Image (tube, rainbow, N blue to C red; front, side, top):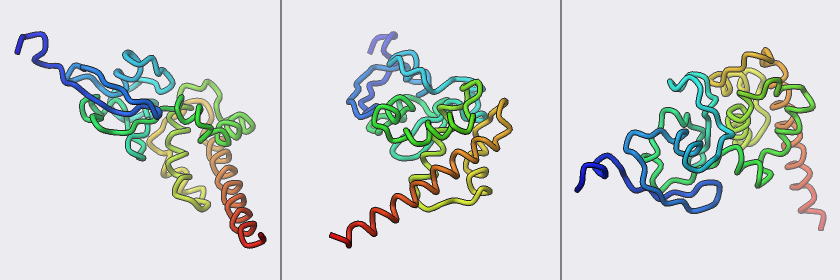
Length: 174
């Protein structure tokens, strides 16, 4: 093995529903791979210590800090970024609620907040405001004071629960 390939690894993963194969530096973080190699710049690299949550992406259904995970660790995984979740409309209601409640402000934290909020809401039901705050506690926002964000997530949870109840009720009516 030559020197230039010694610290590179081959990875094959699915990103936003599309298969991706690449040769990446062994120490490259997932967030850097997504941003620099794939041009998916929605999630941000900020603290690089897993504290701020700006780099949050979904890996195999779980919200993870892209700055704490190596691209090589994502080999075989299914990765979704805010761009992919937007393209599939999975977070359209959350995005609309963030805008309506002015929960986006500068927008730097918004992609990570949306991915984390979607993870919480995918569990179903209507979480308490305390549960929403707890789930989002790893995502820092320096603009909104969080109330608008919690309001937006709670509103979407209630709407989704109401839609689910209506859908179940409609099934028996046929």
